[in-house]
Length: 116
Image (cartoon, rainbow, N blue to C red; front, side):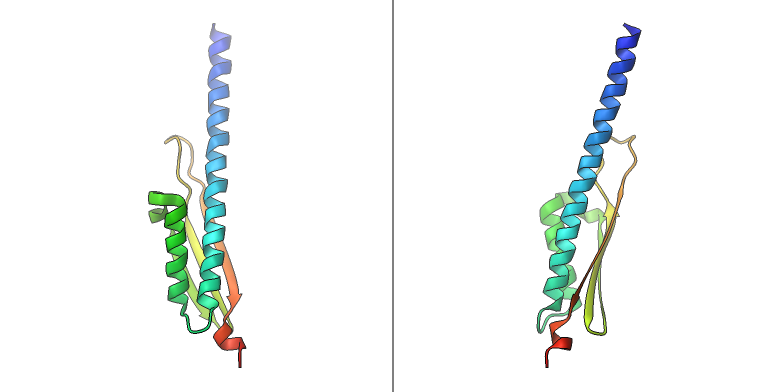
């Protein structure tokens, strides 16, 4: 009985760890897509980096729901490139498991700077 409980507890903890890693990968993939789309939006002719950051925030909220509030989105322009970055923590499934951080960058050439 004791051996069964020990193995069952270990198995449950392993499954929770795997599920937490899956949530981290999902949150990271949502962040990668949102930041890439934000950089594309900011690079379009006549658009500002702030519009790209707003697009990235919107996509983060669509993909992560309420967990997107824990993510910070910044957009900057340096020369002929626009960079969008987001940082945050992936949602936790179980309170005692550590939170995994998500830090994603995307850059794109600004059409206003490279087009004549």
